[in-house]
Image (cartoon, rainbow, N blue to C red):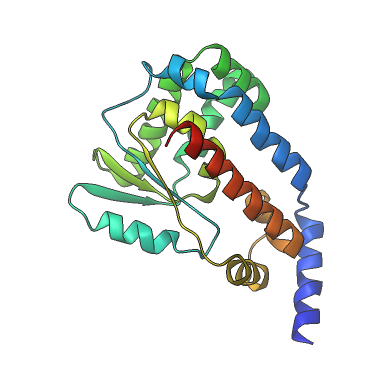
Length: 212
């Protein structure tokens, strides 16, 4: 009965916040195509090297918060939590270029825009923290999608992947109570959770080959 109720609740959630795994995968592929190794080389002179963000990535409940706490215990390191700084910086550019795809095309054509992205990111993060530390820890889950852009904006950034057994993590995500929202829409289906985990791992592996 409990499992049946869980399936029913998630089916209702899926109606409120549909997830399209193919569209999600296409978005990731589009970002990888635009922000490739050649782009990183062209954008290298525009990034902010004075700041060293630590981007901690992984599925929900995989240990990202614990990792953040360990890092934030070090001198000079400040945790931002699941900061909306990258969302804010992207939104600022989208307001200029009209859509996410137009924004990615504009940045790919003009790598100097990564400087604007970095400035907007830091403005939001530092306002949130009321601090001017050079070492930030950001654990928002979707940052893995933007590794190419974040690498260009912050050449000294570190990307840390935290993993948990996929069955354990997947079931926990599926059974936990969540609010409807685009970023968590995939959690309403075990198949979508598995696909999301596959895309996350393959994306990080892609960038690991380009930027070890």
